[in-house]
Image 1: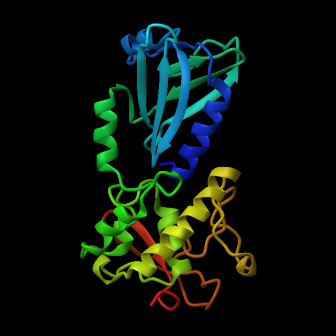
Image 2: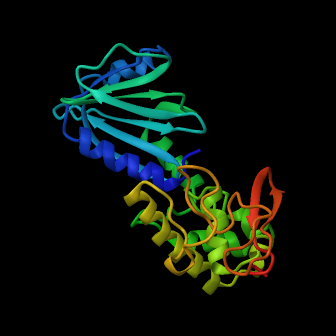
Length: 269
């Protein structure tokens, strides 16, 4: 599942491609057909992200009609682009957007649905602050961390605590902070939390800008290659049993709340 930086990058790209244009909207698959008919011919105003959620905003520019689409890509969802005129759809295309020069097909999302302002408000009430949004209040995440006895490694993956963090950022930011992922939230100081938040803001901004996760400090960027081709070099993520880049100790692994967790028992004590 894409982490939050990828959704922000996608929103920025779609904003550049479609903002201010009247789009042709369709649902070749048919599952989004009635909704697409309501959007067809409206002006695309904005794409924005909250955590792992994407919102498209439309209006008609005259009668004041406004529409919103909520998209959650999940594990399999993806947008693919091609020049206009677009070729006939291939596969199960949930939603097709056609602008003046570029079109995009959405396949396999967890959610693609019309939203009301009340729907959006309910979604945002369920989400923690997003490190990539200027309007985020990190104090909201702190309140949820320091009141919880759950491990900090689990809390950082909870979208109600901080929105947009996935398994890579969770593992890497805790390593960079030297924090044992099994420490309960109640043991995390406000200073530790603020430093985690600041690091996430910086790291995720780099990911959104470059389109790739970069977490290793320049002075540590040597030794073992990335865990797989075209994947980021990491300190601990997907490196179970390999030597820590800092101390040489074997990287540990366990399952935590159904997700793989990686850490260095020496550097994160």
